[in-house]
Image (cartoon, rainbow, N blue to C red):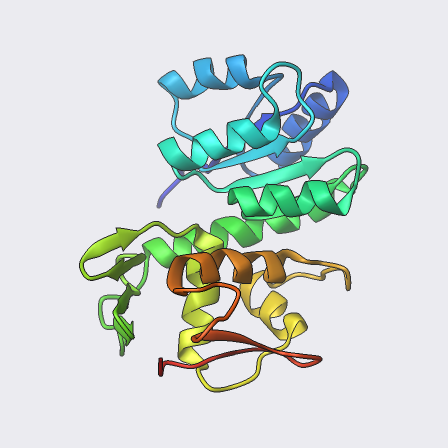
Length: 236
C-alpha cells in the first residue's frame, strides 16, 4: 500500500494563518510546510520536493506574482493563489501568471481543501493517463496534443501548458464543434461549487489563445459564442 503523503507548501506572511492551515491540512492527510516569504520558500525548495504551492499574493520582499512566475518557469508546480484584497484584477493577474486556481481572503479552510483536491486530482489524472487511451494523440492544424505525455507541440516544438490549460484544451478537443458554457467548463475542470463571478475559465481561454492562435484577438480554433460560451473547431 502506498503511504506517500502529498506535500503542500504554504507561503504566507500571516503567522496565525500559516499555523491554522498547517494544522488543518495536516489533519486531512497532507504533509504540510508553511513559510513566510520568498526567501524561506527558496531555502525549502532547495532541499525538498512539493506537490502544490499555496501562495499569498501580498508578501514582503518578492511579491507572490513574481514568485509564481518563477516557480512556473523553474519547476512548473501547481499553484493556488490567495488574494487578501479580493480585487478581481489581482485574481485575474494571478491566473494570467499561470496559477491553477485562486481563493479570496477570508476563506473557509474547507473551501481551500476542495480546491487543493481538485488541482491535485487533475494533475494526477494527467500523470496517470492510461496507455490504452482510445485517442492518445489529438491533432488540429499544426498542433498535436499528446494526452499521455501531457504535451502540446507545434512542428515538433513543445508549447508548455499548465495543468489547467491542458485539461481545458483536452475538453475542447474532445467536445469539438459544440458550444460549452462557463458553468459546464468549470464543473468539468474543477468539480466543486464555484462562484457565478468565477473568471478563471475566461482567463485560461485567453492564455490558450495566445499559445495556439496566430492572432488571439481573431481566434480561428477557440471562438466565443456571445451569450452562450465557447466553441472549438479543428478546422482552420
